[in-house]
Image (cartoon, rainbow, N blue to C red):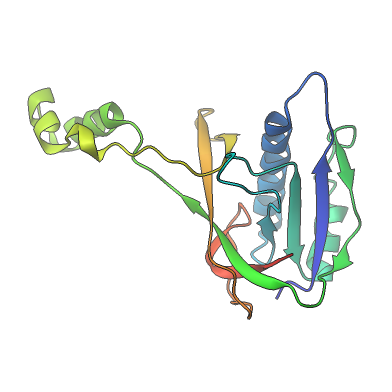
Length: 188
């Protein structure tokens, strides 16, 4: 249960965009959550907006006070202090609602899907085109954070979607990105 939160605000920087710095911050959080094996820490972005499409300049990390203190002690923010304003762990305000924040994946590249099908099924290009028409391609309109895979070094967009606001918290575990389609975070 998320009883406390840490708020981190990206500061304006003449050399780096807020989106670039948020990506770097989120990558550091992801690595820390993997190292800690944490499943009780969730993230939210109070500036999340579909129009304009942005996660905003603020990240909140939610969890128990002890989990948040363990995260702080891990020195995961090394190298970011000049780019952020970090608030200490605080209790969640009374009257907060709850919602889920989760990853959405899209089939955004038909050519990649066809190449994958050709490789997996031993099909020709014509067979793959017949099996995967152009209309399969989806154009996501959700806010995202640009990430770089640690294993492949490829960049990808981590699209984020939010569930509806609820009056009661939904319990569950968060993944190594601090996201969950079941567990909710306080929304305020």
